[in-house]
Image: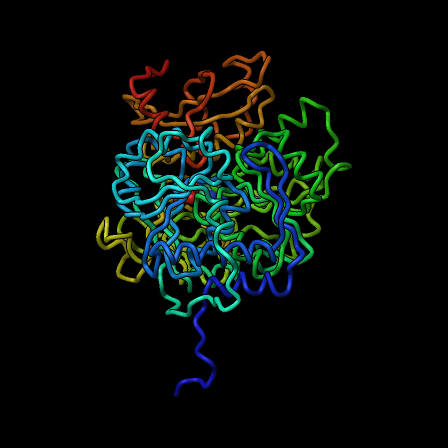
Length: 549
Ligand code: AMP
């Protein structure tokens, strides 16, 4: 027997309608590309998104059309989110840090008809426009008067602001209603090997993810919260924050291209931010700014939670946020294929009164599955392993906001017999359900039949005074197959050598994990999403002769 409740589709437009109606005055603050502070609110975002939608419809954008963006985190990008998805079209958010080959590939693969870009990216668009054959019209996300200065040689160019200004509001406009399984946005995986693959989210998956993302133990979005969204709107929908924020009428603070320590600190302070979300490299820049200027974050800021994911949060980061900022580092793990939320590391009641050091031990774990996400770890024969805190295996996931197949069927069948997706990560799960990520399966160091976690080693190494960033890779070894090589970047002016680093590690790691060598380089290669580019690093050191070899 079916239930007798109304069968209303779960649509993204309903989020904006709600924010506009019930939280019209709540601000959305952006640091613009030009560096000024721009203030708007949910009412204006709603009004402008509707005018944008009307103008897009006039240009032939309809259900299933693809509209692309090459843009930073600003109010305009948020408007585009709601305008495009509200129409039932697909917003393809492009990661501007991708290589030209990957950009070329994904823009053509996605077949976007219109491309909106922030003026920073005018040179990329100018250079690549002829290769973007499907794109009929380009819009610079700027005022018309500035176009000549910004992008003189882009074909079929229009101004975003003019598009809205020239479209009168239509009181009769309503957001279309359609099947909640309709595609809403498209994001390509970082593609460290082979071509990037497209993950196509739906209205249903997005709304379910937004409901869970906003829960108190997760991102705790609220009309009384202020969120600094450092995670890019161009990658995995900024962890779903724009949707959860619209659902609860939360104030958003958007840094535009300004992710340096100073800009972050000023936004946190001036906008009274309570939650900030970003990858560890961003927070490292914030710490460096705090150190260089002897700041007192505890006095200046009211940041309750730093949501950290994308790569492992080092212990030193958990500790510094706690001691110097009075901020709880909420560790989370997920991926593009998971919308991205998978696990979040909230403490349980039994952890609340633990001494700080033991609390940090818990916070180092990536966390426990949120409702909706099922996890399993398996061995080489795909047999399930116990959740005993010891067995380590490949981590697989399933749930209503987890990929079923890639866009246009790339990669073929990607789920196992039980409908689980292989994340490519290796993890341990304890009996409380906390997962600890051992490594990406490609990054784990295989030393004499045993595994060494590059994540664990890096976590300890970045705590060494004088080290700004650290990465560990496996380098081939005649006896052990692979041994760890520690690659470090020094803090400016730091005096440091191999022996200081190795003596710092002594006693903090198992003896056999000790890196066989330590090298210092000027900068670590980063991926398009700000993570350490291990593949590139492995290539760089592929012929490296370890002193022990
Ligand atoms: P992406 O799809 O680009 O967002 O990358 C997802 C991958 O980032 C995951 O499969 C993990 O390997 C890694 N990752 C995400 N969050 C964490 C975390 N908290 N700790 C360690 N690795 C993480």
